Image (cartoon, rainbow, N blue to C red; front, top):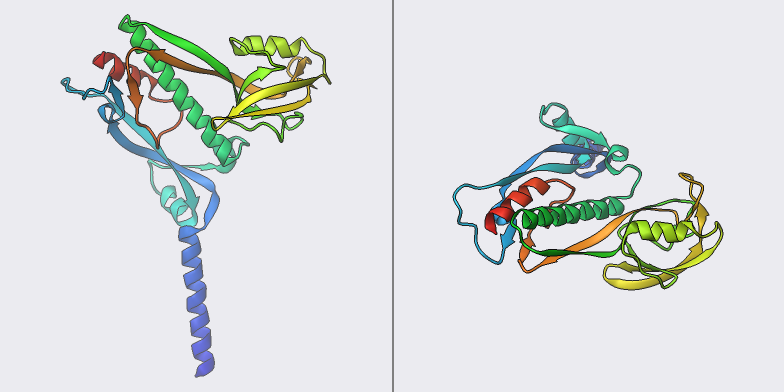
Length: 248
């Protein structure tokens, strides 16, 4: 009797562990499905005023969820869900790097929307080049353990630049193996690092070994604020533009 009870208890424990694992244990897959539709009046404010104009613009998001065995099973039979692998999702980047890139894309989308809206409204504005935004680091780079995705390089050898093209021209005029000192910002803190230039496989010229884009900021007399803490990526630029322009 005692043996039967022990076997029964063990089976129940195994079933409980299996159910818990299927519900909570993450697997290397993600699920994409339509997210919420949010009125842009809740996400964008211009000069601190409420949007009281007739009609409204909305943003439709895409929800991304970490997969579990149970979620994958549900998604398999949901025509509105798509299962994607971790490799497809991150493209070889870490989750932290991916989130940094999504944050950059959203900021870039906002800046472009502000620029277009101000231009359409014939309002003055100014673009400031803040440095070179690091999007990827070549594993062969001497800076692989010194820079991180999301850093902004602001100086090389004490020299500042007006664009990423100026930055690349300066570095590529040096020789492979030359040592450079860079200054970069990470989470608002200033840092320095030195390293040797490598040969870039794309053009056989000298380089730090990073993929980069311009890190810019836009300023104007109009106070335009975004409240999109849980939304990332390059989308919504057109809708942001319309919402801002409508309030100017």
